[in-house]
Amino acid sequence: MKKTTVYRSIEEVPLVLTIDDLMAVLNIGRNSAYDLVRSGRIKSFRVGTQIRIPRQAVADFLASMAA
Image 1 (cartoon, one colour):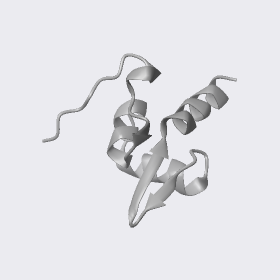
Image 2 (cartoon, one colour):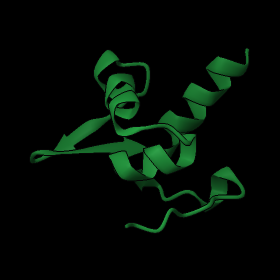
Image 3 (spheres, one colour):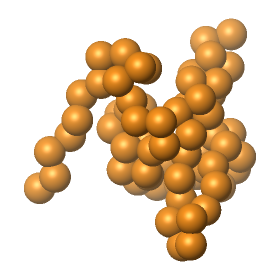
Image 4 (cartoon, one colour):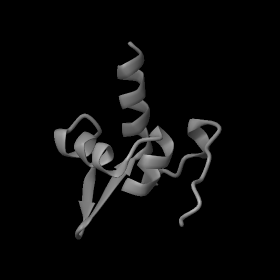
């Protein structure tokens, strides 16, 4: 079982996240994380076959949810 990292502030989050990192930051499941990325609600890009999410995209998503 993979150990989940706990982030206390947005500055502790890596500059570029994986789907697993996104799951830990938002405390959501894999399907929900992929749904957010696929729908474009969280901006992402691909490096080969891997999805990467900029930290700022997560911060923007959270800010839009709080508004």
